[in-house]
Image 1 (tube, rainbow, N blue to C red):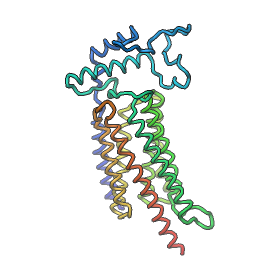
Image 2: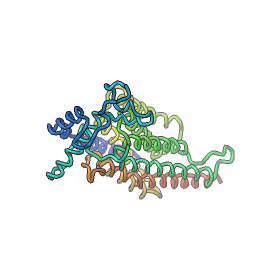
Image 3: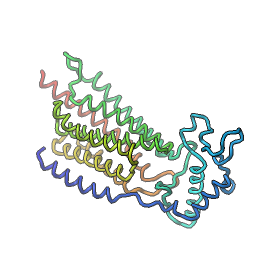
Image 4: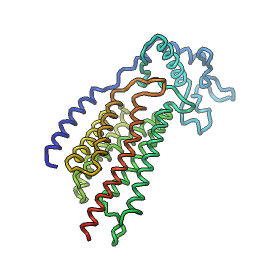
Length: 348
């Protein structure tokens, strides 16, 4: 490919990193609202909001100490939600204030760093949770079809019974990390707690970091172990340090968004440049996925306010990820078929 694509990639990456740095989450206006503060305080003191009783604020009658959070008195299978008097009062007061603001024709504002989204049963962000789960299904189906193609439809090496495709193992690891990331995304959007947030951010960072490694190895056609280790080692070290920082030092959402944005844009540009330069048979799919991925990244960075109580910018990005995931595994299968065909022709 030469040096020019790498120079272009570096310049674009720096520009996009600057743009990502500017897309910092805006200050939460909702929790600074005096009416909201009064509402939360009265709710915690009285255990009710207008005609709604907040069961998490009620004093237990079974002799259990009342100074503990209500969720510690619930069955074990419900304690993972970590809903207590304070969180419940915040939610109901938030929805009450948003209804009042909507009647006045005002736009939604953030509360404690998050947009006001309606719950559905035990799901805090039902639409995002459902879309994440659906993407998980698509990822599993894509990985399974990739596996069946390589081991049951394409020829295997007669001496070792291994695949001819040189990147089989890399794609298997990619599939496992993708499914892990989308699993924790579904859990996080179902119930936002400290530990689900850390697992979601950590799994997403690990998946994106490995995706960049895969992009570099495949586009540069690196097949020997030494070259692969030289590429993977610094990226793995950086991603591991980032994950440790988030989990054990500070859960910095802004920093995590910047890191994930730069990694995502870098790999999308790398795949797109490679597809154009090599004229890969699946180049249209690659370019479409790269373009859709870049648009999705900037939609999430733009942080679109919610509509109808359930749809926000993140939900839109999650919806976009479903067709992109399907197309990406379609490219992986076509790439495996192309490489296998080329290698078998040479060995005849």
